[in-house]
Length: 588
Image (cartoon, rainbow, N blue to C red):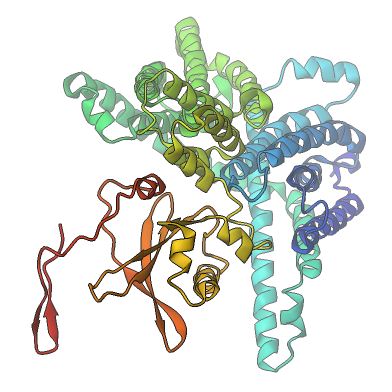
């Protein structure tokens, strides 16, 4: 091996140590609740840099291109970190909502962006003089990018597999020593300062090993490409067969699946992937006889029809229900697939049998478009959560959906910070005109996840309503505070209970006609309303659950209580008892 292409082992080991120490400190800052673990903006940015910069350097650097690698990888990693900071901002204000979806999408898109960028970095850093670089950058071969992409993927997968097996072996050894009552190894495996650096060093070692034997990655890639070579004709026949039957069956059955557009785009994506895996050597490779080759390019020429079908399906959903995060992602994927298919169709029209000559040009340029797209979706320019929030609020303002049918919970469930900001603005707009909907928003956005700062009894008192009034309620009790403390203890006995944001109603009613009032506590949430009967037995307050029937999903009883809409309803059917066995008629 040329010394210029030798792997700089000391540099990789140093980077692995740096990565291990950095990630350990970041993890412990979260555990100890100190900066930057308490600041999602800085935390996400630093974690992104600590992962992306070493990983890209591992896969790109050679002895002769260290400077060029740093010039490529460092700015890109900083860009990812800036995007990570923006994604971290989408987690604030913390404690009011869970926005894990945007973190997951950032992780996936960053991985895709790094994978795409790495191929271009490797091409740039493998060239000679600056003049040669400029010339070569305008003549990037898809064949070379394809080879690098498969090699990078397989080397990365091998390293992950190696680290996984290494970790299993460590746990096996710890378990064996634990049998001998030597627990030091098991205790070490529970310490972040040991686990994180160890795994990073193992990954760095695996990179050195597998990059030195890249011929194994090329062999695996060849095997996979051979399998795909036999699958592409079958997939093409399925695609052509579906299109041939579509005029007779129509699109109704496809839309009734609820995921018709998704199925169509999956078919497109698989066809494009298989096509590029087989024809990576452009026009110089004809792996099929001419008749089969032409059948395949007929299938490729008809792929834009699938783009039209999926576009129609997406338009129907968006026109009916507006934009959502899922539909934004679907539109992005649709746009990328449509561009690929249109580019291939243009090449077929222009070159006919020699259309593969245009394959490299389309793929290289679209590779850059994909890279730009997955970066933009994590930026303020293309924030799918903000676009979705604006779309749903616009539908409400245009009376396309009524306030009663408006999906408040989607904002809390799927839109994170953007949903929170939109709901606060809507709450201000509603004012006193719709108190029940304001209550829904207030309950959605409370610090219900803040177990480090539990609700104290004074705060608990502020979310209680009394009927007919507090003075009348308390005068029927010898020690009102005892009942209040009993209810409070019941509601806060577990950190998993979502008592923040609930509404509590304390009522007195004679439920059994014995001349003595009973004490009822109603707990009202956005999704559920329940009640408990509180009785004093042996000088202690105990509760009994009361079944509820709420056909209209009422979740704002305060207005009805203020209007004294409360009554005792006798059961329509009495119970039947035979011996100790009771029978009752179920209530409809």
